[in-house]
Length: 152
Image (cartoon, rainbow, N blue to C red; front, side, top):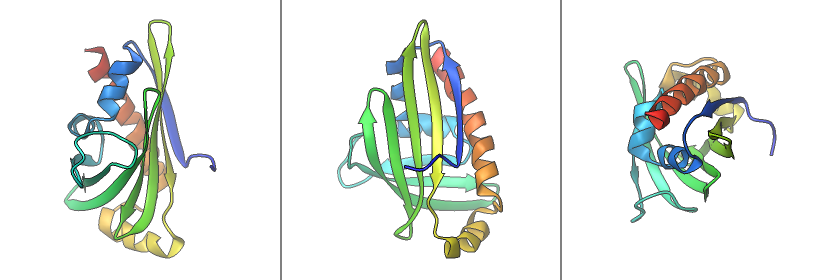
């Protein structure tokens, strides 16, 4: 796999299990993430498992859009999913959790998977011209919120 297009990490004074429970929980992530506002498990899924799909709702200002994601990793040290919009690849999001003394390190990464011809369409839909820079800012905010939630 290529290098992520955006990535950051944070030290969390909470167990890896607690952090995994937060990043793999759709309502929990909706309260922490910058653009993700919620999701619904599809096809009878009720939680994070490899192959489970969910429809995610997103918002930036007055713009709203939805995506369909498929969970690719659901292990104690990693939660990841591939995102599609209108059947087209959009991104991969990944949360790596490394246990350590007194807590863990949480790394959030994303890979932009949009075809080049699709970029102008997503700019119109989301209002974001520089998705890589925006995702970097979003990840930093999200990690701080996840840290606060895990440590509370």
